[in-house]
Length: 577
Ligand SMILES: [Zn+2]
Image (cartoon, rainbow, N blue to C red; front, side):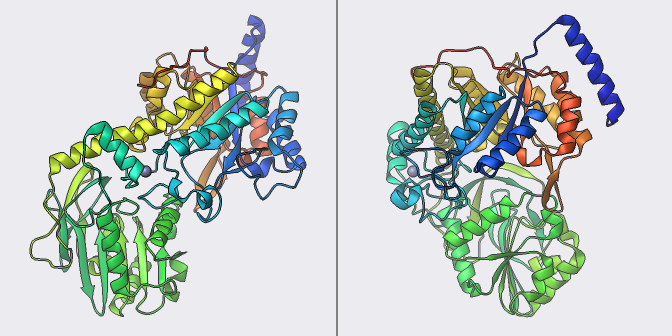
């Protein structure tokens, strides 16, 4: 049930009266993330600060460092972003405006992800070896001390030169647990854990894949090239008419596996895939439900393999060149007429590469004929071995895999990788507190522990050891049941609710576009936070703070002005575990 506007106002008046009666001065964290577009000119900053103040928010987290290591502040270590006018200091101006209104400023840094920037520009142009190996989208190799030192120095420089209230980490993680084959990581990992260093030569099956998914099952005409350890198909090929469809039956994109990369390269080469005839289909139905990043990351990965693609939806499908190639990654929903078009395309000599198959759409006969499988197997998660199937001669078989050794190595690799991220957090925290003991250190984190663990983001550990003051878990769900579950899980990390400020979204995804979130939903999530006695909230993001929301907040839950709430100070640990 959504409360009506009248009931919000009534509830708020009662709350306000109670506060006045108690004579309390309210401390509550009312934060919001903002992007450079909202403060890169004096006019933009002034307009947005007005709105932030009107909504009675009291803490802002401006993005000041991203996109290949460019800064929206004056730095001797990083160039000023290209979209800032000469002589203007975006962060300096923003701090002046914000502090004049009693609004705290926490500088937001994107640590792991390089940003949608060509890697022949920015930091990686000077230090190509700083780019993480394995996976698709450009990422910093946080395993390298030089990378961690550089990021620490940039963050500390910003803290030193500006009247900041705090430093804020984001993407303080990896994109997964892919192996980095660089000399540094392999040597350090080998020295710490006693495993033989890997050289990226593991380009044959069997392999261990750390994954989860909902594979397709029941081959009809498809030939099984590889199986999972439970015998279900892992890689299949199906010929139909003069065309062909290959299926990688799990989330294989960006896995960082040399064997997978080699197989995809060989397959696309065999298909005759070129920049001109290769398209990547993202159907409207799938895009409405899933994040577009999955597609852009897949495109990035394919580009690194030497196969640039162009992203299309089904309206452009008819333009696919004859005998061309279509990539379909995670296309769980495909409309009936699109399925029929795919069948016609393949029969006429077209090629399809399915990665993580169409689990919901596979009930359609045309898709069953294209892929040569007709249903789904049970969902699975965790490590699986992918082995060449007997009798096939497409996949080159490598030496047998010592599965126990591979599993132990992977577990230790994740531990090592997690340690490298935590080392960056600790070093920034130590230096920041030494420089300005009053500065707050916070991080935006995955809100479900299991998801955080899978990207090596041990924020539970950071809170426990005190290397971070508080976290802002990005709980952008629209489902309040899911949000309630998150509160239950957070109790383990922060029993007193002192150090977790929920990050809520104020946008929703509709037909693949981000639109302002329904006010009643925003309000119900704020109510949920208050019901769980959180010390505030954090919104993502400022672009969606429209007039209606400003009014709803200022006249509703934020009617009483509040100063920013922070947890109790603690000593930063000196010794890394
Ligand atoms: Zn490395």
